[in-house]
Length: 152
Image 1 (cartoon, rainbow, N blue to C red):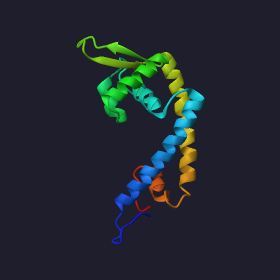
Image 2 (spheres, rainbow, N blue to C red):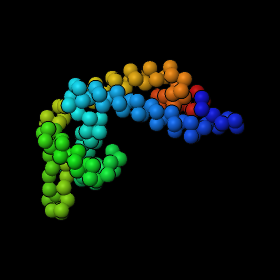
Image 3 (tube, rainbow, N blue to C red):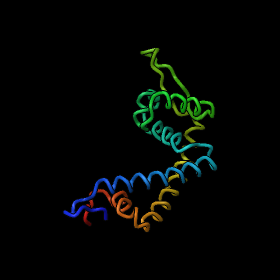
C-alpha cells in the first residue's frame, strides 16, 4: 500500500500509480477499439456521454467538459464522428449560435458493441494489474465495492 510513515496514504504515490495505470489501460483500450470498431477511446467516451444525455443532444462545450477536452479538440472529434455517421451536428432551435451533437442509430449500435468489449477488456486488464506490486494499491482502491471502508 502506498503509505507515508505516519500511516496515511501517500497521495503522490497513488497519483503516480493511477497515472501509470490509466496510461497502460488507455493504450490497451485504444488498440482494441481501433482494431475492432474503428473508434478511439476518446470517441467511445463521447458516444457514451451522448447515450446518457438529452436525446436532443449535448452542446459541444458540455461534451468538452464531460471528457476533459478543449473545445477545439472536441470540435475535431465531432467532425470525425459525423464523417463516420456515428453522430450529427444539430443547430440549437433557441440560439442559432449553439451547436448540439446527437448520436445516430449507427452510433448507438457501434457504442453498444464497443462499450461491451471495452468493459471486458478493462476487467481483464484490472485483474492483471492487481498482481503488479507497483499498481496493486491503486487497483484495490478503484475496484473496492462502493461503501466498503478503505482499510477493508
